[in-house]
Image (cartoon, rainbow, N blue to C red; front, side, top):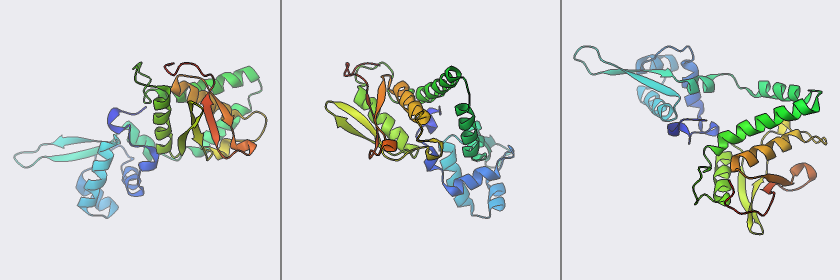
Length: 229
């Protein structure tokens, strides 16, 4: 997913002024503080503050320039991650691709593709939710970490309990434009498979907003040992 230095910087954290700076650097050239100050019409202090945030997030990298006996200066450029965030909003592309997947006539091919997408997303989350084989990583702690990660990505979620088992509650559909009320419920199944992959244990959608329930709830499919991975 992201490098350790940027893993806590999620999509909702990018400020409009930071995105403005990224957009100004999309050419791929290197820029100095003076270049960006002139281009954006703000103070050098404001530029430095934005640069520090973007360096920490892994969206910028800097190069030290030493010329003669003077103080060294720095030049900045976008990283691969920075170029991705400075690009166009991929929502329309994602929606078009989703509709094309659902339009595949062969049900087996369509299901295989949906499962592959769900598993890929799940593996990305799994790398950060504690599926590292540690004995102290309980199913509930993994679910709590996943809930925090989803919330960081503007998918508000929380943990409740059904008996002794934790339940992941998502009370607002994360992808409303991709969700439909047909019997297929493809997005619901994708989320179910993605969460199962992320947690290393099968979960099922026990309640769904499309059925009039207050929240979509994902619960462990079996009351097996909490140490399952």
